[in-house]
Length: 428
Image (cartoon, helix red, strand yellow):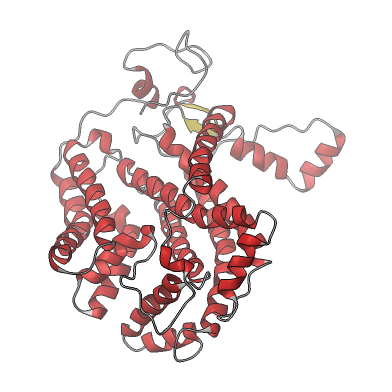
């Protein structure tokens, strides 16, 4: 996959002159036109394109909102109201940005669960996968910082609670906390720091995304069968086959996104954020955004403050070790009958942790959160290593083509099954 040749041939004299000095068009052609992709990719592989579209939407709307936002404790809340009421289409830009964060995480969680199910973290894609985990960490930091900017009650107290737990880190915790606060409590200096970081981090995410795409084009894409491309009949050109599927999926996801913007713009937020921040009044129940709830449940499941902080960060960091914790030689869970059951149990447990994170930290909710937290880590530290050693996987197809057409099928010279339309299968 990584050794595919550049087949771009410039036609005009100007194009030849430009290509000989900066082969940009040839790079784009080899990476996004002629690049060979497995013919059995399904629609779960379109979420990479969806995430790039969402990232660009967040950057564009964020830059525009920053032109009207005042990052001071005295004026932040009113500046958001000014955007909503007085700026032309300000309401649309703000709803696109606020709901876009949620849509970004919807897409990234599907993308991550797909990678875990199909073993996209296995060699030689370890660096590609780790770059994805780094993007996820940067997304979480960016989303948290953005959540504080409206400076409503939930923004203020969310910032206070989350930054306060950093003080539990030995030696450096209080230093980090005071640097973030810019003083002895959350206030205007904190908001200025959070706004600056929130503006910067999306461009860092974009840089890591470029590395992520680069690494993808070096190692090639994984596929639902989890087996490599062995001949030209196993692959199709990226354009038009993958691009058409990516564009269609992005449009469908855009319609889903539009529903939240125009019909449920505040459903994923919190009503307390429409009340100006007040350090003297604590909300009855402080909760973060929905995409942080599983980790918030893990944080609260441990009675010790430092232990909760360690487990919360470990829950994200452990994802980066999946390539070495999974001992199976088979990538795709489609051919791993035992691991497949444990994987879906892991998905259910993660969703349950999200639900528990929104509940009060009392009674049975705490016990359930502890049990789910225990399984979350056992899945990586026990299930993945042991099941990989003792599981007997199902028979793998001999080629990607066989996984699409079935054994014994003949193909035409174009690399497609004889008599079939020249389009990649969405079956996996």
